[in-house]
Amino acid sequence: MSKRIDVKNLDIYYSDFLAVKDVSVTIEPRSVTALIGPSGCGKSTFLRSLNRMHEVIPGARVEGEVIIDGENLYGKGIDPVMVRRKVGMVFQKPNPFPTMSIKENVLAGVKLNNKRIGRTDADELVETSLRGANLWNEVKDRLDKPGSSLSGGQQQRLCIARTIAVKPEVVLMDEPCSALDPISTLAVEDLIAELKENYTIVIVTHNMQQAARCSDRTGFFNIEGTGKPGQLVEFNDTQTIFNTPSEKATEDYISGRFG
Amino acid sequence: MSTTTAVDPTKTSSLRSGRRFGDAIFSALSHSAGIVILLVLIGVTFFLFWGAKDALVADGSEVRGGAGLIAYIGPLIFGTLLSSIIALLIAVPLSIGIALFISHYAPRRLASGLGYVVDLLAAVPSIIFGLWGMQIAGSAVPSFEFLNEYLGFIPLFSGTVTTTGRTMLMIGIVLAIMILPIMTAVNREVFLQTPRLHEEASLALGATRWEMIRQTVIPFGKSGVVSGAMLGLGRALGETMAVAIILSASGGGYSWELLSANTPGTIAGDIALNFPESFGVERSTLFVSGLALFVVTFLVNMFARWIISRRSEFSGAN
Ligand SMILES: Nc1ncnc2c1ncn2[C@@H]1O[C@H](COP(=O)(O)OP(=O)(O)OP(=O)(O)O)[C@@H](O)[C@H]1O
Ligand SMILES: [Mg+2]
Image (cartoon, rainbow over all chains, first blue to last red; front, side, top):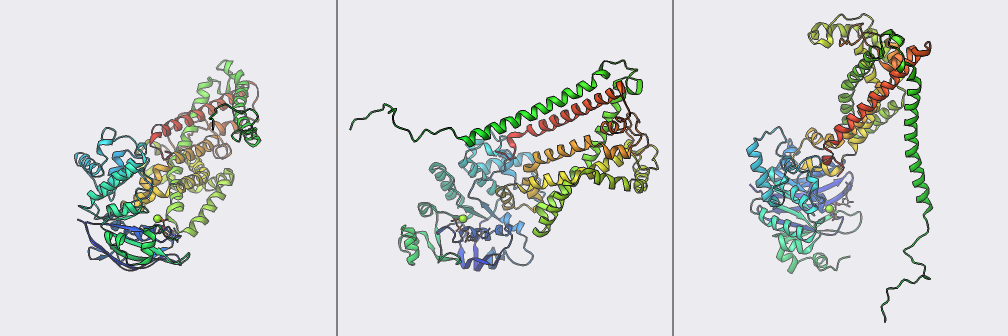
């Protein structure tokens, strides 16, 4: 159920401002792709364009193609709602629904689009999703407590459980560990390694070790100066990027000699 | 170097500071503001009791109506609650709908224009809307007759339709129009406060716009909507002039028939109509009904707070 993503000549604009320029890349199924780069270079912008979440921002638009499973996400008649069911997203700040219990949070996406789910099926799905997110043992006795009663790291894993409960094909993560302590971070990284078996994963991170530890391929975004668009400078196997990058800018950035 | 932990009294510590005057003043101000509101409340209660004491101790035959306080005030409380509930039933869904349209559906330009208009309307004294409602009361009669004919099997719409249009339903509608702007303004404000994070979480799960609203905006805004409704209800309960003018004569007892001429008055309307030419125990009776209105408003508010607090750990606040 994981799918290849082909991005072709993608330009992303905020109104008239070109934020990301001419990205072409292929993301392999059942792999983890890390996106790194300095702040403001368009990593989040690019990531959000992969499930049309950037459309939530007024004035944001793209030119180019994002092809998943042979279908251009930006083609005519494509419904962004359906796109987002296929391509899930985990955000930088844990954002469980505060008005829902842990269980309701996991089922939040499943109950959308008029889908009904039986009681036993629901219980089963809650358990598998929470197990999938490495959270089951911590919360199995308090599934009816509010999602906001969990710690930050638990909340983030709850958000991951909620995302995988709708069985997407691709999971996008925008700095999912930046609000977490090292132990929760490791838990999420382990989780990413497991999720790779079933999903295509794209993760934005500021943490080089994290990119090196948990990704198969890495893309380096860079920006030439303020007001200039961000670009994908280099994209390759993680090993290659971290050991023998072909671009000077990449080498500078990962060795901390940046800016 | 010797380590000493003794405190050097001559040294002025950078950790100490003089009294912060801004803090002290602000704290005094907010404390006294809190006390003032309590004093006002106590004062009003005392004033009402003082005015009401004659009627409270008087014989049942001496009070207005001549049949005792309960017989006089009961129907008025009933009428007050009934008209306000009708008003809320109409105004709550309508104000939520308008507020959602402005906050989440309308294009941005239109939304800010509309929001501005609603804020303006909310500032217009409700009597203006009331006057307009009274103007159309007569022309509403055909629709009342329609309701009576086709929905007459519902007790609320049964009975004989009055030809004047001055009915309980009319009052409810006029009150609804009067409280609509303020409720819409409050709702729009709370809907706009929904954290972007939660809206995006919902959309990223594949929610349509309406599903996103149902999943995040409405639960988040719920307590605000209730507060807005209470604000509107307060206005509706206490609205005097509109009701007084529409129902110049009251005294219908406990009638559920919203369309008939046989309509209970409301406390506020009754006081406004009868206060000027009453005196002695008669006037004191009106104070008792004022006290009753005070208590009713209090109870309704406490009930609403209780509803909100029941699931407060699930509120958007944490
Ligand atoms: N909502 C928006 N409206 C207008 N411009 C935006 C918006 N969001 C981002 N931008 C601009 O787009 C560019 C890329 O931003 P983006 O958030 O994608 O960077 P990023 O690489 O994710 O940075 P960070 O590492 O700090 O998260 C920046 O110049 C930013 O100012
Ligand atoms: Mg970002």
